Length: 188
Image (cartoon, rainbow, N blue to C red; front, side, top):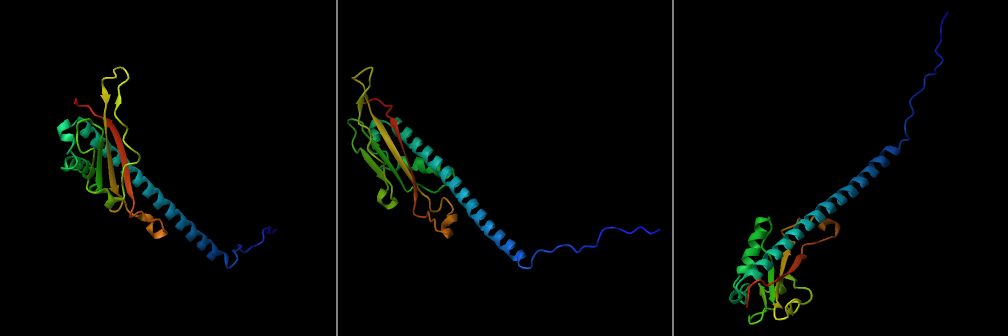
């Protein structure tokens, strides 16, 4: 007795003829969107890292200015000493020189309360607001609290790759700016 298989021979089903091209096209669009998101994520991460370095550079400059002798404070940034120290840190971190460093102070008896090196107009950068005025210290009104503010500006062009310029987000003319206020630690 012969046993006959009950299964029928079926031909495998094939997708409709035009479906393969649609799937490929969808994949190409998805890959394009993923590449743009990846480039945006990388660029934002690099901007945030540079902002942290500029923040530390402004803190370093403010600390150096606050610890400087009062006779040197009036010409600290005009002679380039402060900018050189800030630029040395930025160069060590892998960035180019800052486009400007602005030093402001409210120290009594010291000339030149605002010093910028070089002119901030070329950098499209400047401090926001005004430096707080010298105020008496609460426990002893005879002690006046004086402070310095250092603003550091770093151009993004040449420091951060402009990955999204192809997609219309051009950051070439932008700068990263950070200010730090520090109490003057030297006696008058």
